[in-house]
Amino acid sequence: MSAIAIVTCVAGTIVSWMNERNIYNPAFLMSALWTIITVLVNTPLVNYYEIDDLVYVIITLGMLSFYLGCYISRHVAIRSRKKTLPNSTPIMNYTAVIILSVISILLLVFPAIDSIRSLRLGYTNYSEIRNSITNPYHNRILVLVYHFVVRFFSVAIIPIATVELFFSKKSNKIIIVSAILIIALRCIIEGGRIIILNLVFCLFIGRLITNRSFNISKKVKRYIYIVLAISLAGFLYISTARGITHFGTHFLMYICGCVPQLSIRIDSLGSFQHTYGCASLNGYMIYVLSFLNRLGLPVANFSSYVQSLLSVENRIAIGPTSSMNAFVSQFYYMYVDGGVMGVVIGMMIYGIVSHNLYKKAKNLTSARSMALYFLIVETIVTSMVRFQFTNIAFAMSVFYILLVKNVDLRADVETPVMRDGKK
Image (cartoon, rainbow, N blue to C red):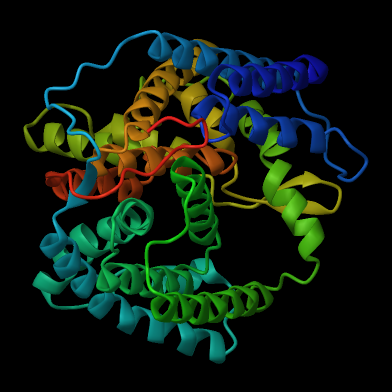
């Protein structure tokens, strides 16, 4: 079954490139990543426990369903309510972005200081450090702002800043510098490296779509490179502090360790009740279930059951000398929602939404659509970890991107030219 999964992913990579003639369409990104994952997990470079054939069936059907969703979207025309002006370029609500950025930086500084202090005291378990600063403030207003503004907006700032970097005639310096600071502070607080991966891929895709470099001055570029260098140093320090010394081994495990872990997690489920979308869309459904519970509906037990299935933070052995947690891939959550059929339906809808946003982003006239597509790119490149919409902060960041809506279409600048020669 592993060979069938590999062939499916390789074929998807080739066909998606032939159809779109670019490497930033969602089908290509998903196919290329899972080609790497399925190939690596079957090489002598790794030594994991035997993987159940059911996992490869899930991967194969999931990928085929994603392709089908992209195909459906590709052949359905998008009707826009607004007329696109010739040589137009998108702009956003700069005032809202700057205010939210300043608030986020101010409230992230103190948790970052606490995190650094914990590392200096010798704590290396970042799960414990994160838990200790889950509520860094005691004032009720600050707590609400931190949890419902800062946590959500700090996810949205990456696609927003990417749009500003590549799609505006003259990028807003405050937004760009604020984005770098927010990313650096989040790295320190969370000890995670996924946020850096998201940033790199958003910049890479933005560069490919527009076929041009950053729209900022050399002076600002210099500052950004300095901050990025400091962030890289922080990344290495955090990795060392967490006890990671063999970076090559850990890198391989982060890429393809999701497959054996998915196999073990599914096997441990046994006979279970499906969650019907509440797992994959936990970032939204947790609030819906909470609201229904307050109305007196008997959903409290079901809500607790969903959260128990989503609890994958405990480390498990995936090989004789390897153990990891959290990385269960997008397929786990869709499988929990409805078994194999849940994977098929979920991945097909995922493909439709992804390709639809990709088509809108190619028009280069909607800042909102482009930012949302960059968010989808983040879900794809981290699909070996989880389906990101299970994460509350990630899911709710969509509303902040929608909030930073287009003010208008500016028609006084040159529209960037795409690699396929189309404007």
